[in-house]
Image (cartoon, rainbow, N blue to C red):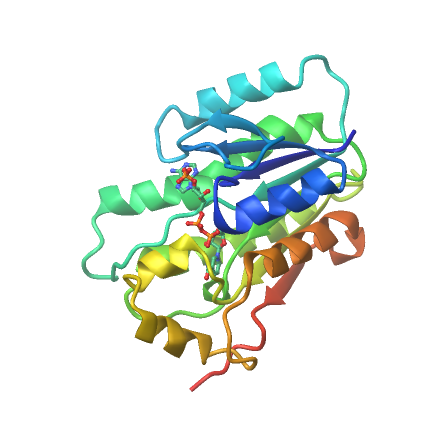
Length: 235
Ligand SMILES: NC(=O)c1ccc[n+]([C@@H]2O[C@H](COP(=O)([O-])OP(=O)(O)OC[C@H]3O[C@@H](n4cnc5c(N)ncnc54)[C@H](OP(=O)(O)O)[C@@H]3O)[C@@H](O)[C@H]2O)c1
């Protein structure tokens, strides 16, 4: 049975992806601080911001995948933190916290899971439109989301010949708690943000989940940045 490891499947895009992968017949394992509300998902409490995340993840993977067989694994690096900060007000401690979740977390999971992955496996990074451009007041998010593109490209090069493929899916404005919290649940701002796509609406988490599951099943996307933003309108 294929196995999906998803970080942050307790809500939003990760939850929608977990549901789709479960429906498609995968064993689905969620690493996040709170459990997923969906039945059938194996939840394990992991806080990627903590300094013990590496030992926690390694111990969990050893327990979840006993034996040395390589499995068909889809690893989705989805958990992330978005906060308002700038080049001149972000403390080193706060930057380290974001870096641990958005960049080091994926690296820790790669280290634990790549030795368990057989051909047909995939490592999917969830970036953002801010993986390739910047806006003001999002310094740590922009920086770490750009870093994920580098991680994905280096993963592609380092795993050449293994039958494991990778991609970075970059969503636009998607209707999740992260976005709603970011705009302080302001209906007017949400409407303005909806108007920033060529379709005049927010993306649903299921639309991004479908893009992720497509990438998992199609190694031809190896090394690719997949834009999933409904056509973001630049002003
Ligand atoms: N929504 C958008 O408009 C948008 C746009 C572009 C890119 N994205 C990207 O899409 C991905 C999913 O975002 P979303 O909108 O679905 O966000 P969300 O609804 O806020 O979900 C974020 C997930 O990350 C987990 N998480 C946060 N901090 C964590 C930590 N310290 N340790 C472990 N897990 C942690 C959360 O679980 P717990 O709280 O249970 O720990 C939650 O399941 C992110 O990578 C985000 O950057 C989103």
